[in-house]
Length: 360
Image (cartoon, rainbow, N blue to C red; front, side):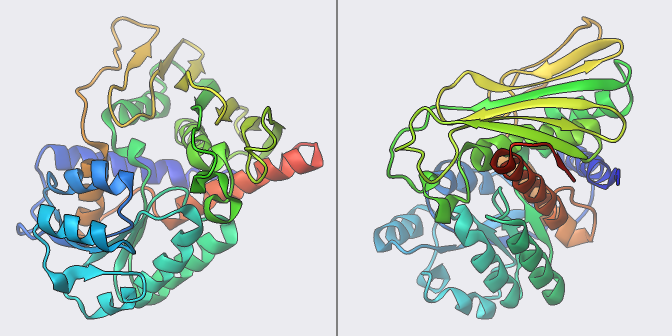
């Protein structure tokens, strides 16, 4: 059945992000305390610096299994010992009033466990994408947060980036006429063969789970619909390296209104970081579309540009989620959105296994 709910939530998130950018909405100056769980490259180089720039959030605690990282972070971010946790002491966050939100920045296979534990500890949860390894785990995470009366956000940062928001407006308002077809792709050449992203129990899958979800998300929020049919193919040029996970996948989707989409993701090569919307009266898109910075939009009409200053995506999404908690407002990509992506991902894998189109 066709539903516009994810698209409407995205639109609400866009409005919220715009409000934040303009400084509207009074939350009394309070900043929510965020705990980072997992201190890898993303936390170190993107999320922690972003937290330092936010209006409604602050870094309050860290969770790591590496003592040397704990010491470094403690000094760098002025954290005291009371707010340094490891994975064995994690559940003690329930007694830490400085922590309002727990940001899960762990390998995908650990998202469900720590989301559920954070909810049981009485904390709101913000989870990196993909939300979990399976749709079943997503449902468990949603249920745990609902039972605890806490919000569950998923870190789809592009939904808070101005080029993407404007592209959504183009589609919604039919600026170039109705959208007829979408092309979306994201991939790169992966390196270290021993990294967690190539291990199924930790990653859940390969390129599709890691970067393919960006292309999938773009098609969902640009169409404003959920796919009803999917057909997919997988290619492996290095079966040893990609023994446990997918290397390259191409898939097509049909949507209820008749919109079609062609998508691709890979760990074998770079040069794919884009989306394109083909409409009755023109085209628009982005290339690059999903990077942390340097994004570029384009359109087929000189009088309708797709160009904005670069922003910190992580600051935008963190502030939006914090403000939604503080004032009880809308936040776009919550648990149901992450669940829907995993349901579609599982349909893509099923199509590959069975060699046929899969209906949703």
